[in-house]
Image 1 (cartoon, one colour):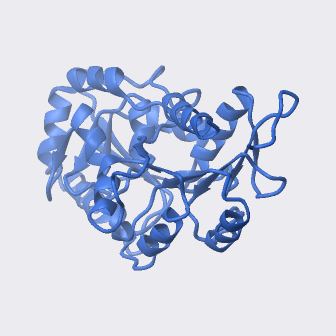
Image 2 (tube, rainbow, N blue to C red):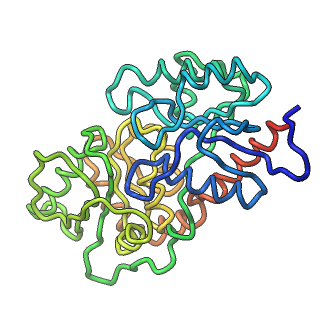
Length: 323
């Protein structure tokens, strides 16, 4: 049916090529996916030619040079080659960024797919309330980071009497990432209302913020980012309606308990395992995690996300689609 034999590796065509610079969660996913598929005997390409055996669609918007084919190319391909299965990874929604076009684009792409992966149960339920039929083939696979980089070994352990370092990092400066909360924590620390803590902010932030006492670092990725995270003790996220995200995942895989916003979307699924939530003021949750830090750290070690586990599940779905 697919025309490959024992002399040819099966081909998976991925709609977005990776970048090694700081750029959202899809790119590190692609890097991990490519490595896993190659280890398992596949060839990975970033075009629809030559003819693939499976197509993996990641974010069909054509808004970046790394996006190699989108909705219109998929429509043509589906019509010309209906026998080739399409796997659709949904990792976005309009509610996350206050947009009004992403949900509809994903709906149209979903109509062409044979199997859908949502990066969190929250995101599946979000689209089920809109247009996704949950009787269709689908899987929820939570994000994971590369464990060769993001691991807890060598994490800085707090010493008696020393302040705990809170950290957050975002490559985007979108306000819905939670900068109002980070700014308030910075202010509480500088005014002495949250003693015993230091705040570290990595990445980008709105130009309007005037930080008081935070340790500030520009965007970074890979080993440098992981080393910075391992110098900290608690991961703080205030992102709202996040489909899943990678920032808190990278923090957890570096051994950091999570303090998360209760409107965090898919983040809440992770936070319930090894963290505490808050509504408007994270200071109570931060203090409790600090007091019970060994307990929360143990929970992170026992239940932390895994990039290996994540890409293995995608690989298994691709293999099943060949049947």
